[in-house]
Length: 442
Image (cartoon, rainbow, N blue to C red; front, side, top):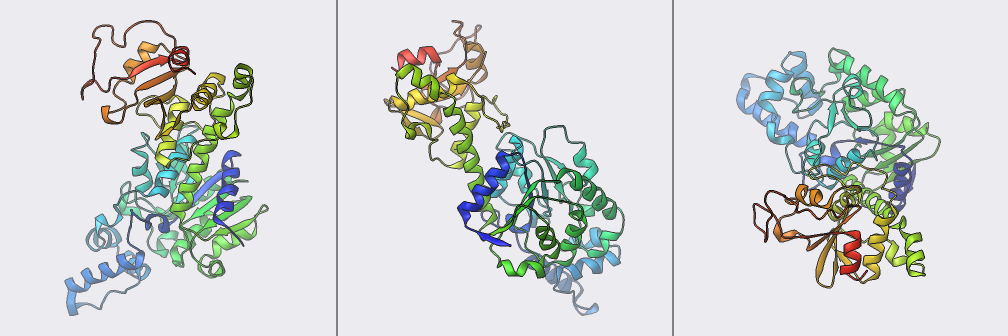
């Protein structure tokens, strides 16, 4: 396994993403990153031991400090769910705020940039991260469930179960692996992955573990998988991998196009990958207008005008949604940007006129300007549908509806409005591209 610098690793995974080859394996380390801060297995085990020993005192032998041994003990007694999960494991231990890694996974799954994701986590932080992005993550606990996900939708396969979806059958003990229903789930997952991860490039984040049962599940699930490249992102020392995660190491030794490690936080790496994807998307939109700009201005646009702005991830995401023409309350679901000359030309002409980034918008002559793709739509309909998208405090002054037809009708024929209010939204001026070109001097 070769070590890669952070930026080189992001670039390599961006190549896989853009080629439609990227799949993801996420482990517990991802959810331990701030602000999620989910407890480690050791912490969970110590709390379970305290609760158990405090309850039974000297009437029973002390509970083991090892989470696997604890789970095995209760599974053998038929009490894994009824006693261990329900009375000794804090139900709130798996709750927290999604971190930038979770958000990046959700966003990249909605676009199809990540073709599928497998997680060993039982928390629902990836699913929760999708909600503010206006999307719903499709989850399955085995290959049969993820196979029913609609075509074109990236699924999340939770091979150890889900605290919210089916808390009774989470995988915590090695002996569960050979007993139904877990054995059937693992076999189903392995069959699905053998087909859907064939010749894919695998990004592994937050999974470096010496938990015996975790590695046993992973070994069975990945037994028939044949990826072409693997990049492991973890802060652990690379020489520990063969001992701690033999299944992963054996899988890495079989790949054709490289087995790499990036010593970094998985959350940080995923956030950086998401940012580079967004910037590439925006760069391609702008690039679609370069030839038209040259024809109109008789000059090649400076390189600085063709590069995407360096913004925060949530701002790039909002700009990407606008340039894709996403409807209100829907996720950014396009991996490929629209190849529309007028859209890229509008951004280039704004920047050429002196506009600078202002969050997901552009600021020109003290006006905040939003560029929105509205291909083949009527301007009054666009305005009516999107009137409440932006609260007055954060709304732009002008929206350039690129592709909209100026039909001359008010946004609401029955009730036109003036001024802004909480109920009606901000008082924004809605312009077609032609109107904006004249009025803003583009």
